[in-house]
Image (cartoon, rainbow, N blue to C red; front, top):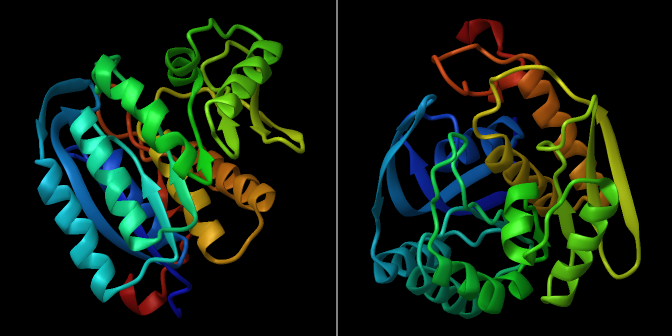
Amino acid sequence: MKIKSKILIIAGSDSSGGAGIQADIKTVTALGCYAMTAVTAVTIQNTKGLTAVIPIKPKEISSQILFTCKDIKPNGIKIGMLHSSQVIKSVANTLKRIKATNIVLDPVMVAKGGARLISQSAIKTLKDRLIKKAYLITPNIPEAEVLTNIKIKSLKDMIHAANILLKLGAKNILLKGGHRKSKYMQDILLNRKEIIIFKNKKIKTKNTHGTGCTLSSAIATFLSCGKPLKKSCELGIKYVNQAIGSNPNYGKGHGPINHLNSIIINKKFR
C-alpha cells in the first residue's frame, strides 16, 4: 500500500492507548497515511479515569513541530489537547512560521471520565488565538457550551452555538451531537454558506474512549488527501461509527474503539 499523505499531530499522550496521540496515530495509519507527532503532555489514565497530566514545555512543543516539518512537510495538521495559554500561544506562533494548511482543531477540554484538561485562561487564549487559524474545529456539546457560554439541549441550540463560534472567527464548525439523549446522532457542519446535518443511528455502548480524537484525525487525513470538507466529514463519521460498532471491549470503564476496522491484513502477516 502506498502512503497517501503526511499528517502532523499536535496533542497529548494517553497511556491507555485509546485516545490522544495514540488514537491519532492509529487512525492516520489505518486510513493509509503517515503520522508525525508533537507531544503536548503526558497523561496517566485508563478506561476508568485520569489521574495526572504532565505538561511538556511550550518551547519543546514548538521545537518538535519546527524540527519535524523542516524535514517532512505535512499535508495536514490535527491539533488536540493544549493545556495552557502559553502552549496555545506557542503552537499558534509556530503554525504561522511553517505556513500550515488543512488544520483541524479538536478543542479537547474534558476527559471521557469528566476530568478537566484545560484551564480557564487557556480557553480564552484558544478563542482569541487559535480558533481562527483552523480550517475546521470539531467541538462536542460540552466543549461548545464552554466556548459559547450557552446551554445546548436541542438541534436548534447546536445551530445557535455553531453560529456563535462562526462569529469568534471559526471558518467551519463540525459540532458533534453524541452527548444528546436521542436514538439518532446528529452532527452539524456549519459555515457561512451552508448547514449540513449528518444523521446516524446511535450505537449503544460504553466503549467510546477516543472517539473525538479519532474523528478529527480521520477528517484531517481525508482533507490532506484532497477530499472536500463535506466528504471528509462524512467519511470520518463513517470510520468512527464502524470503529465503535466493532469495539474490542477492553477495560472496565469507557473502553477504546477499534481503529483497525478499516484494515484487511495480508495473509502472510496473520
